[in-house]
Image (cartoon, rainbow, N blue to C red):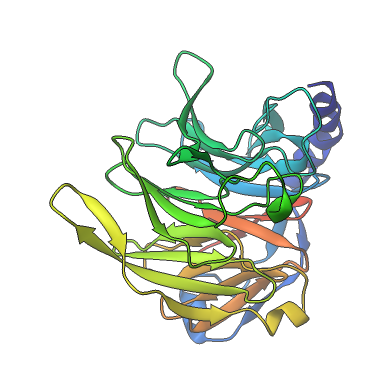
Length: 333
């Protein structure tokens, strides 16, 4: 906690400054005129705060004071809060690992989401689970194993309208990653955790599943694969299985390949968000890649940084981006 407090002191003045006159980084590349219908021609990538280690998992939380952003700093095992009014404050430490001994470089929480009751739900690397904050204080484990074997390190998640969670489980949060002797599963899965607690393995064909998002009609699941040997985005049709509300995935389709972009910038396909019109905003090498559901590139929001994730506010008027040590935003139309 002391470390997190010192970090907070260093960041608070920067957050206040950026709220008044935001600095900007990078550039916005427009490949297709359709991007102008989403992002204004004069939009910039504004830096809201910096000085973090590795930002991830942004989620917007609506409230009666204009809303606020929560995001993970994985190496620092912390979740931070940003708002226009207050700037940066520490929200939680520890966020993803509660052990007393050293646990690698990425022990903290990663992907964050808000459930239908307004509770924060988190993918926790170090504790290898998905947890939810309880109203009375503390956390409750939603899932930490598959068929009795510990999950690798849940990475990202998304809720559907029934309260089910779709999530990815690569080994990035293990101290030795795929070679870690504590690893109990020999694959990296994409799962669905139903609201009643039933866990279904949807696919294990992806070698490093990472970011995950649902189409607005909840008929398609989009998953990023951050494997450097095959950095891709895939879409899967979601199909009914039986008459009890269970789901399965149909055959996946590669909608975009980041191999060539990886030669231009550092990074890989990571977290993503899908606009209400179906447009995909996907983090990838050096920024955010804006593409149609079929993978046609509309443009890129080039941060020039390893860019991990993004999310919209409740009105989809602002896109928030986590990029290496920064938290940024882009004003939407």
